[in-house]
Length: 70
Image 1 (cartoon, rainbow, N blue to C red):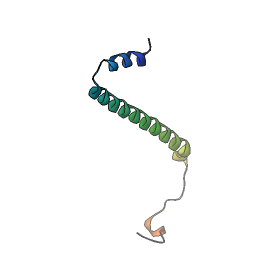
Image 2: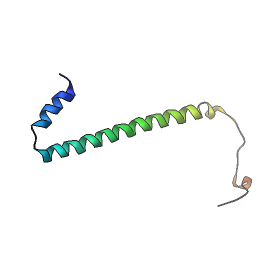
Image 3: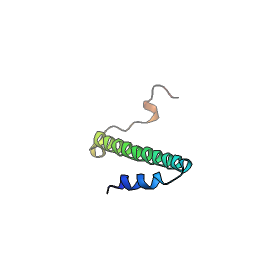
Image 4: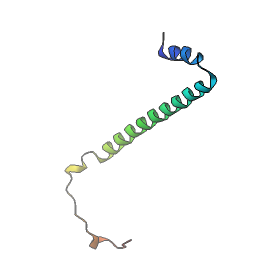
């Protein structure tokens, strides 16, 4: 028996008001999981984009190099 089926059987035994709480909690868990997945892709994208840059030697800039200071 799948976990989702077991959860459904338990939820069906609950009063409607408690079922609504379960739904809210499940929606929260889905949102949290999606954020974690998005964060993982963001970290991977940044790591890929910046890959190897730590080894690059480039010019050092100072505030004297700025044309406009905010």
